[in-house]
Image: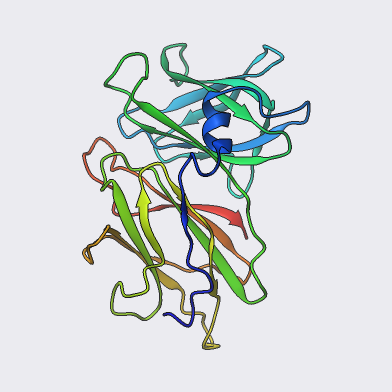
Length: 259
């Protein structure tokens, strides 16, 4: 596998994604008059379907996403929805009602794409205080010719606090060194890593298997194939909880960044 891995990433916390990601979630304006673009992921394991209302600097309240169920992604992938840049309020309400589940402030830079993931828990805390919003800039790369790219976001509050991710060309015998993404903590996003799409020129490209383990373990929590259909494909893999459970989901949520 070591000959296929094009780059081994360092992980990025929301703080390392910047001061940008953390500051832009909870602090002041990061934008101008041009729109920002977001895709929204409902990963709150104990919350029912939600409508998502966004109030921008123009004080107009817009229902951007409607009836988004657990592990739902809107808009359809690949794609983004334009929202006001600068300081916005993001409010989740029970679908078809005005009953608030959570509300948080966001600051999005103009002409920038974001994956916005609501995770954590809605049934504990006060007024959605245990809902954890992630707002991660999508600096989607163009893979080198003949390659594909993956990154991973750890959004599973009930999973291990830190995980290792192995991405192995098929066929394989399970997770092995080198670790593709090491020590990815809850709320972190990795950098993109690049792999040869079809290194052995097989008639049918073999695809990969993604293994996720607790850091330092070789026992997979997730063991799931992924098979991009074309060279140049870029994917984001989101680790989430089981719905109404207390463990990490045994499948990742795949977002199509490109192709």
